[in-house]
Length: 223
Image (cartoon, rainbow, N blue to C red):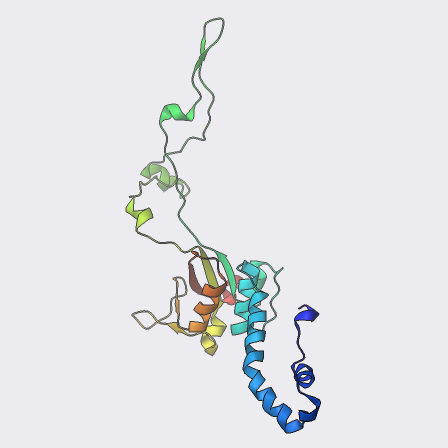
């Protein structure tokens, strides 16, 4: 933090009080009146030190809900999971596989000067189509399925995911809403009930970006 942004409120207050009025009772009373301004100043200064970058989002979430842990922005995702930190990762979205006409895979055929016709070179890696029998031989030979337009227009995928250690959920630091069965899913997205959690993300994240929250257990890495 820049030294020019740090204010010594007691000394500043003493300077602003006329010498004839510099009494302890008077100074204490003015200090109480000054406390809301001090809180607003420190809160605004704290917000100005953070941006929508991932490391700053992770830092402020851990400082707010996971203060007993030391956040290291240079740590890998695996290390953050071992340290039981709140971290952010990219969202999983389905990939599109485009299907071309057979002639679009190759460059146009050309005729040499001496007459023979030469087939054009392959421009795009051809899509390998496997049958059900091929899939029985090897699970890697997955058949091709055509997706409907609704699969990509009606489903909304989040831009990033926020992973929360289960220890924070069990301790009550972060409250989540259980599903219809009254249980908490360990694989599907969860609904965080803390208003402050959403306020922090909505304040710092880039406009238009959406997110989902997921719980995780560090013991999974050891298995």
